[in-house]
Length: 212
Image (cartoon, rainbow, N blue to C red; front, side, top):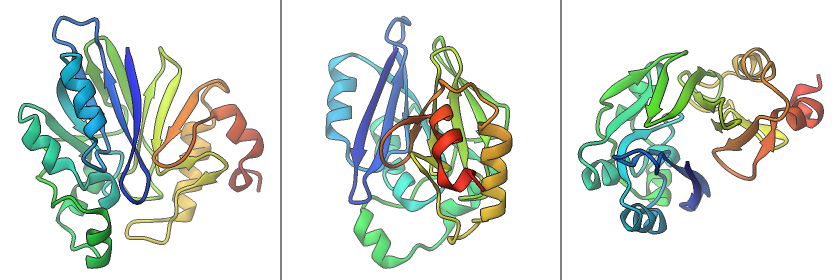
């Protein structure tokens, strides 16, 4: 399995590449395209990978700014986002933020995601965990077999996503984390949308937002 992280854009978003290089078609998914990601494109081309999905963990502009670029670069990909964040693709963003992150307006999603859905990338399975709070449609992507999870802006190393933006709710976010993420095994590695990785066990024991 290919699992790579590229830190993109002025807001330092973690853009992920997940691929099954052992499958005959070498399918791949690009998660939260936040910049031109030249190194990722180079890696895809050099290794003969075939992107089949572009997945957004939520609809904030810093995570979807380059959906259009990668959809145009790989026209056969399906663009996926949770149903509750579909509306965010059409929202007017703060012009200053748009100028900061660059990119372009996202095309409409090809498919909407729901809690419990499973995305298959060759033999790799990503379970969709709906974790509203940062946005209404925020999701985490869990690979049980490999023991890791992409948490978007839901859960960070020693932190949580902000809840003062459109669709945010502190109560919903804490509930999502406590009810849906904390029951997972301690050794599940989490990869947030910004910053460094952690584990479920580490966050359960030490995250200050979960100690109340």
